Structure formats: C-alpha cells, structure tokens
Image: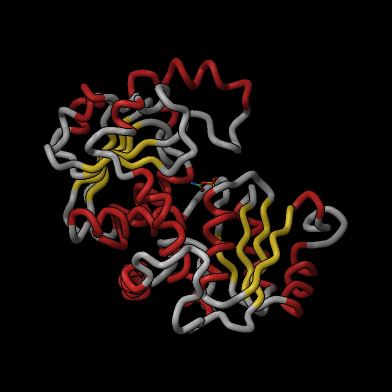
Length: 308
Ligand code: CP
C-alpha cells in the first residue's frame, strides 16, 4: 500500500519520481484552462475523500482541482461533521471509507489519527498536515526550488522562526533530497531533536544558529512560516511575537543570503510579521509559485499512491 504519510518514510527514488512527474504534468498543462482534463485522466472512475479537521484554502482547493484534472471525483468532508474519533473509532472509519473511496487525504491534529487511519484503511492515505508534519507542502517547495534553480541537493536552506510542523518536513526532506538546513530561531522553538538527529544521520549538515544574520549567510533558500500555527494556543500569541520578532525575514536579512537566493512561505502569511511585504512581493519571492505547485506536486503524489 503506497500511503504518503511523511517524506522521511517515503523512498528517495519514489520522492524523486514524484517531483519529476509533477514537473512533467505541469509542463504538459501549460496554458490550458484550469478545469481542462489531463490527456491521460489517470483518476478516471476514482473517488477521493478529502477530510479536513482544520481550516484550509490551498490544500483543499489544490487537491480538489488536482483530482478533477486527472478525471476523478472528490468529496470534501469536515471532521466536525463526521463520526471520526467522536462516535466511532478511527479504525472503523478507515474500514468504512475504504468501501466507498479509492484514496483518502486527511488534515488532522494528532499524527496518531493519520497513522491509525492508514493502518486500518484498505486504500492509500495521504497526510494533508498534522501537528508534526506537512509533507505535501514540502514536495511543492522542492518542485518550486528545482524549477527556478535546478537540483536542490547540496544547497543551503535556512528556516527562520518557529521550528514547527512545516520545518519538520523540511528536515525530513533535507535527509532525503540531500541539502543542508540551518534553523534560526529562539531555543524554546527549536525543531524536535528527533527530526534534527534523523537528518544528520543521513549525512546532511543541520545547524542551529541563534543569530539570524549569521544563519542566512550563503543561503540558497530562505523559508519562514507564521509565528502562531493552527495547533498553537492563541494565548501564546504575544509571547511568540516577542520571541520571534528578531527572526522576521526582511530585506536587511535577505541581503545576507546569496544574491540569487529564493524566499518561500507556505502561506497563509501574516504580512509584516514573520516576513515583510517587501520580501514577500520582492525579487527573491516565489510564494505564489509554491502555492500553485501544491496542485502539481499532489497530483504526482496521488498517482504514486494509486500506482498510476
Ligand atoms: N500551506 C497550506 O497548507 O495552506 P492551507 O492551510 O490554506 O491549506
């Protein structure tokens, strides 16, 4: 069963195949209307369940459009309106959904829900974000980097801010795609040790640097994310802002990166908090290519899951 649960648990050659397939599919669609079917329609007659226990714009729309372009059909389900984990076990939900649909994408809180769903489902399950990882986003980010600058292997990626779930998937990707990652942020918001150790065990350099200017020196890619994630307590907002303000990505910070460095943010962004509008709309920024590439990368992920 080809579940897509995390980048570190998916084979390197499979990941490379998905990035190459995403680029080929994107190129093949060049200039066509968004609603036009792909020529080969690999998901014809397939039904895909998209389950959201948290809000979403990009993940929801890009998966829905991607399935439709490939000739399949979707049902978008809200966790609140389902029995998932409330009136019914995750295992039973997995068994039932498997009788109706060919593929399940879920955005949830605890990664245990994702893993239990995958364990008991008879169809592939895709991680559309948990509190600990966001692999589909990073597949889109790798695609975006390579479209603009060529292979990411051997490059220096700098994550500035909170060592959150998106940062964790970047660390997973560092080990699998072979790039170095420098995290810069306050110690209390460091990524989990397990993510750092695993990437290091795969031979890449992971650095934790408190000084953002020093961290960004020589960067090929600078990435940040919102300072308060969906799973963080909103009561922590003021404290987080005080801790993270020195790590804002602004023009002054970007000036320490390589001249052709890219800037990424998975969005949604709080403009002029974690990154200034001058950077988000400036010459280094590829944030809307990243958003578009969610569509192409996830189409490749779905094809891989279904063996298409
Ligand atoms: N980046 C991302 O996952 O966006 P959404 O929360 O809008 O899906």
